[in-house]
Length: 364
Image (cartoon, rainbow, N blue to C red; front, side, top):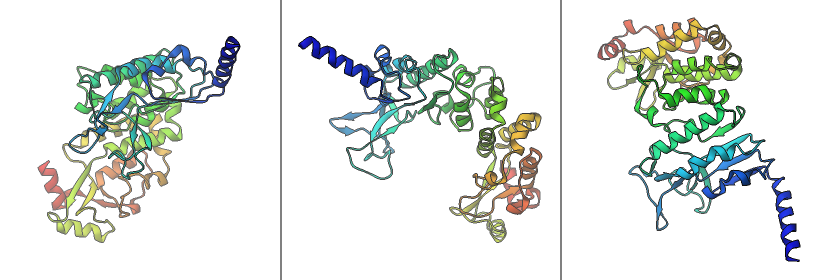
């Protein structure tokens, strides 16, 4: 009878596993690839133990700014890729941790028992001492999985490839004589749809925006992806992040600020933001525009960007509803790149004819 009960229980467990579509992993011991093969119909896996909040005697330890401190698990980082590769029908995965919504990670404190997902962040993770190397090793493992096709190129992967995650990106841009092997491998191996989501994010890679796009061009299917609506959105996101901006304080530039507000600009925190290049901000923008103009694919993506998208994307649209102020040279450069801007939607100024702007350029 005992044997019959054990056999029946095993049969029920096998049958139940076939109906599971989502797995939530909360312990490293659950990342067992042989066991995972029983769940042949799983399409979503949430690894919720890669990072965890550090607590001592049930009290969450925080940084000086109030953000909870985290630790990353080497065991989880090592076992994640083989585990994910065990699911033949995997479509989505999340890599991160669970936090209590009553902590400062969430703006509205909720029930202390309610948990929510969060991802690794270079500032919050303090344990172990080699935490940054562990996360980088995870990225390299994922790159290897995508490169070998152990992980499908169609996989939707969240919690990875965001700002403030890779140590090299936190330090700035790679040196020309020492290309970053980690970031460039990600750009050459990760699925294109994931790269397109992350490519415009400041602090996601140490590779310049222009070089990120050039790396995409070397990929199979890149041209088709760039010609899609997603390609136009990606290009607009890239431009919005690298376009040069200048802050004009109402106290120091009262006459100019008054002139702009009379034409439709609106004050924001005691000043105005205008799109204008200075000596320290023009080069990244210039490189990207030149790349767009030299590429038929990127040029087409720029021309296909709807005007409605331009009018809804910051900084081309002011957050407070006022008109965006453009330096004429920048505005004409964007027009030459193929973007469908309408001068009546903006305030166009000539920096050489405005003493306040000439002073800023000279200071820079």
